[in-house]
Length: 250
Image 1 (tube, one colour):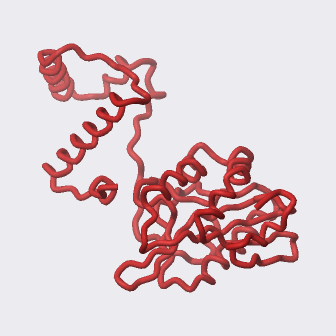
Image 2 (image 1 turned 60 degrees about the vertical axis):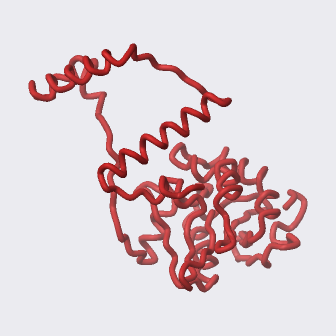
Image 3 (image 1 turned 90 degrees about the horizontal axis):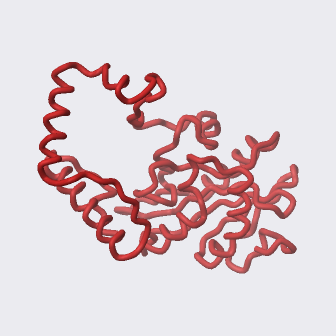
């Protein structure tokens, strides 16, 4: 979709819906139309993207499409336009599993968070409603939007439409700001825990010196990634934990 064209008039996009507020919606179903969105998508991310929406960036999802989109799934990206400028993206796919048609986020199962990219403004909630209506009109059996953060842009509309939360998780974290330095932070541990940590550090030092390096690209980086995944899979197997992401060969 070029800036001087009607955004709903792509050759293989489904006809866009035009609304009284000057917004229009189009449905992106093909990879070529997805790739044509790149400059518009990146511009929207620059204007409205949040740090936690890294996984809704075009480049991340382009690589996801390259490796994860298969014969049982199809792009179903809802694009919202305002005055020929991309103002909203619902990055979703339609997938068929065991005869059930499901709408889910692009990025499954590797993206930890799913969300809608959307400009802030007085029309935001209305545009979200329009996007949700477009998604429902696809007629899927289930709309399963996993990994929605409490502060996600899409969260208010999911509350309004009565979406059911099937699971809730809290990310692990350390409040390092509560202590002046790491030595002070360690005082919260019991003597037994501190003794165990010292013993493990001694054993680690017996294996060899510990150093920290950054390796960003090349064969060495690829080897380290493969090795880290092998260690993680072995750790999960030893504990009888199943990870959908790490079990996926892709």
